[in-house]
Image 1 (spheres, rainbow, N blue to C red):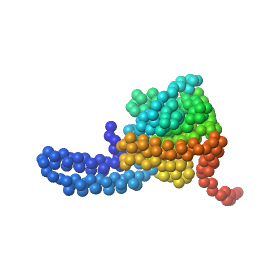
Image 2: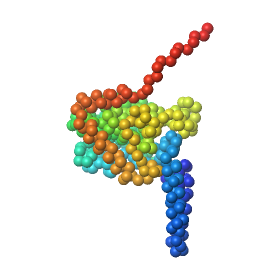
Image 3: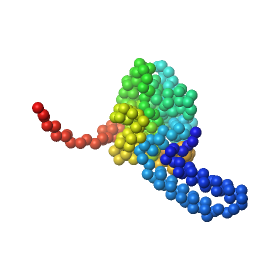
Image 4: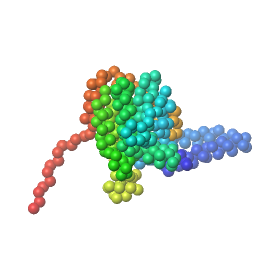
Length: 326
């Protein structure tokens, strides 16, 4: 499967020409250094032109890229001594949520995150990264343990939303999400959340009540997926690109609104182009924020988290009443 998205095709074609010219020169022993240099310069200019002016729809497609790194891809690069834990101790082990114990620069932490599949079989097992209630209860169990033993909590958000099927509703989907929101607001340990791909609706927010919410540059975060919004607004999910442009779902937008605290840069082309570099950027940001938050008392951490969410949103003055018609 190709890594290139439609808007990246001009770059792919130019890179192909450069590689072909290099190969031809090597085979025929002809010096094309000047020509290759000009093409490389044009490639850099085109790269800046494309990735420096991405639309919200293009960012959405990068956030959903099939090769985009997942929680389990980042964990070995960001943490050491990771021990994965399983199950909610009530019903089952939901594979759409992964988590466990780890160390960040030697400091014990609890890591929890959504996990998409890598292929069709894996996606079916992990419900395409959309948790059932047992997944949220599994995450809550890990976070309660972290709170009990004073370990910072780090969450990775990457889901289109909670699983929407009747099996999830039968087992208390909304209650499980609500319980996570309530519990996370009361924990006396630092909580840092990172949106690494798509953060959709309550399924994302169930892991998103943190002192600090960070986003990768090409991630998205929204109350409903663009596809869902398009289905409601225009009765046509295929208009997701149009919905994305109006929903203000990009990291840049959300930073301006105060919903998140930091945008973590990505390599040109997205996180999947250079996993080690991207993981190092995430690690640096996590460590910096964790050191700041670790200086606060449990009471101060709870107050900090409360104040963060209280200030989110802009409230307009009450509009004048509409005239009454007979």
